[in-house]
Image (cartoon, rainbow, N blue to C red; front, side, top):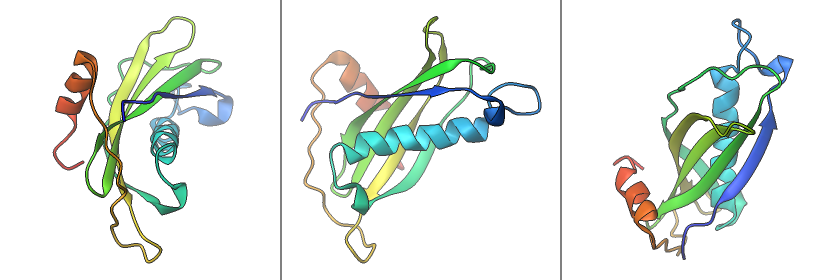
Length: 139
């Protein structure tokens, strides 16, 4: 299976701000998990996915109230029981890069133990191969 892009948008509202009046990193992380989970759930039964790890998330710019940000998420690596998503975040309109990161999910059985998911991810383009090479070792 090749990479499949899942897109989520979020409007940055007053309740999403930190004490500087810009997007609170905790809220951005919450949305990062949501975006990664949506990409993993598009390939596997969401009932049997749990988040294992988040890597990355270094902001390159502040995000002010009223901004709309886009989370582009795709599963870039599949282990026997894990799925790793790469998520990239941009401002809608200007397309300015905000941050990116990787998230690993583990497929579990009804008792919460690791279980094979039988998903294969094949990098077809040079960009997809580059992303796979960037996946952190612990994913």
